[in-house]
Image (cartoon, rainbow, N blue to C red; front, side, top):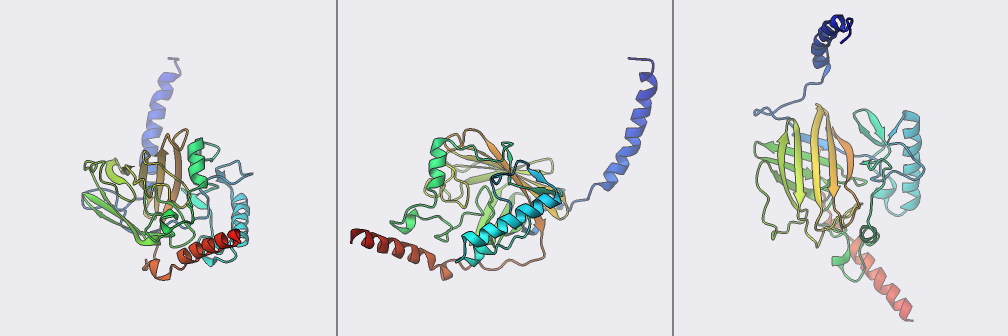
Length: 308
């Protein structure tokens, strides 16, 4: 140690000690339950335009305001152009890229660094076929069949109805998603269910790591595991989600998917829930679901024309 170090060391310690209370004072106080855990309860919105994978030509995860505005415009133009007959897709509820801790994100994926899904050949084949065939309703996506999907692990983003209600008790966390009325009842500190029990969205259990709620989901149902909105997962997939309240009005949601059958390496995505004053409404999917009959009838007509 140099002779100057003897002088600098106490000065540094003094400065750190003086700064620490100021830094703590600036940290936003988060609401807590009676047990002292972060209080996630309330209505949260995740209405973002950022896709899961980084768009072609975009090299950065974090964008400045100008870059974010350009990408937002491009996404909205493509949505309207590619979905002229579907107003929900052509005019999504979202108007902004995902914002996490004040940063505009070009994709939900934060790892791998290139923002792309690391598919294996089997996984890529499953992704291309995930919308299913047209021989019968069981081949179609679970969302088209109105039996859910976006509220299962990992929580995914669609073009509309992206509100979530969270209810907490000391031993359970309930996450209800407006879209498809998906409701997850997640035990805290409990053992997994038997592997023979196949739940639509898999078996989720959780634990607290400090102020972060960590949810681990395994054993997804093979009959529904490849019928998601964007990403696909095999029956061997493991999903680890992390919920962290970074301020009273921002709940950062991060998830990691490990699935050697479909992905060559684990990958991680992240976005934020924003506290909302909106109300959740009934998602009357079956009552207005004319698409299934139309798609299957259209396929039968194409088969008749092919025979002729």
